[in-house]
Amino acid sequence: MKPAEVSTPSDREVLVKRSFDAPVNLVWQAYTDPALMRRWLTAMPGWSMPVCEMAVHVGGKYRWRWRFEESGQEFGFIGEMLEVVLHSKISHTQIYDPGDQGGSMGAEPSIVTVTFVEVNGTTNVETSIKFASQSDRDAAMSTGMTDGMEMSYQSLDVVLAG
Amino acid sequence: MYMKQLDQAFAALADPTRRGILVHLARGEATVNDLVALFHLTQPTISSHIKVLESAGLISRSRQAQMRPCKLEAKRLQEVTKWLSKVQEVWEGKYTRLDALLAELKQAQKEERKK
Picture 1: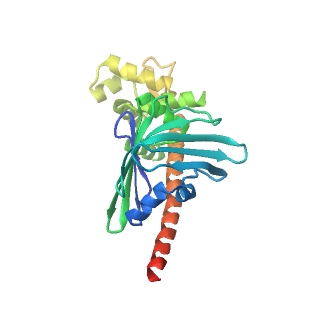
Picture 2: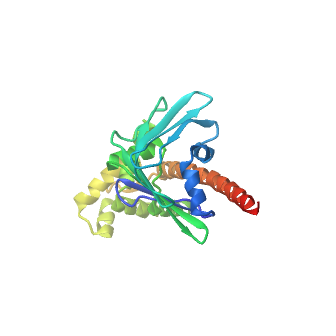
Picture 3: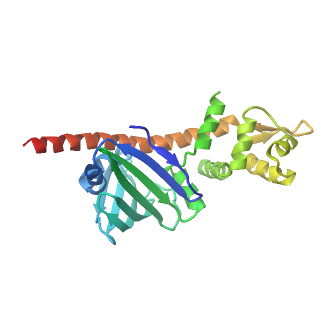
């Protein structure tokens, strides 16, 4: 599969696109079943996900918490489901809980929308993260939990490499 | 301090004109007058962009020469782009693990159907 494509369609938005070689019902399962989520959402080696709770219905709450086993440092996300359309769309609020890890993503919740579209057994997933403001987005980018690599940055890279 | 510098660099890079200036400076030094002519913008506009880029550490200006040409601080810019691609690696790492999980689920589903 082609690597994740990341863009910043507006001042306060980050969009990540990626395709997966699997039918949408399996991708949906991997995104909503805590036992499966733990398998791939644990951000880096040495990290575990002691809390992964999901209530996948409108108004349902979720709670994710990661822990770096070596130091015991923790951080997480909490939020509420705004829209749930089986095998098609999940939209939820997201509040960063810095724990003792530090960093900030702004005080206002961001809105995360994940859409799933299956074409011939391949599922295209688009993740949009909409921050309350541009400064929240930039703070989140500095915290390192999201990404805003633009084409123009890449073209700068090419110029610098050449 | 490092995070604050990154924030400043992101804010500086958020503007298309400033990115254009950096691309131009990647080819060589240029004075404010050169940039005014190139971008068809007023001198105060270019000067304010230059100030933002300079305080983010992305460019520097010579103190000696009278025209004070602007120079790209390639090392600083590379730090920023390197950091960004690192964050992208985190996303891709997550998705690679999801690829493996999905392959496993697909296989299990296939075997389930055989039964």
